[in-house]
Length: 209
Image 1: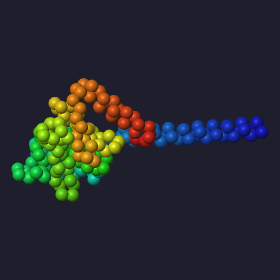
Image 2 (image 1 turned 90 degrees about the vertical axis):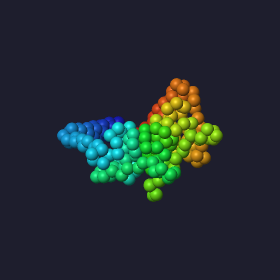
Image 3 (image 1 turned 135 degrees about the vertical axis):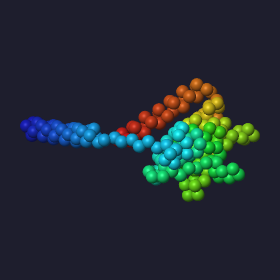
């Protein structure tokens, strides 16, 4: 009985070593392959169709388009050509302001923009128009100011909007209301810890990335 148990344990141990060896071999092969792949960069500028050479942010949407925020317009790049979105005077469905600080794609695939003086923008891919959420001093549920510097998202799909002078705004998408935080550095610490916690929870739930 004991002999059989020892043989079984030895077999399991050897099988584990073989599996570990194969795993290390695969990882080493992938690393060597990656090291020998040449990395090439292509530099794009206004001469290639970019609206402006001062770029503040870049992201990629779920369809593979590259979105580039510049000081003079939002650019969509398909790998060959640029399509530029700018403010159209008199058209409330266009960008409110051409200076774009940040672009963000939420989990549901929507593209959001943060403007230098344009508040928060939401892009409608079907109509290629924008819904602009702007500061309104008479509306306590509006965004605190129109200068947006960063956009992030929590697990519930609500957005955290960092503004230049008025702290963070929590945008509850279900109610389209903004909750303001003007606690300065304390709010920044809370914001940072909040997203560190979200990231750690995501890693624990999805350890393979």
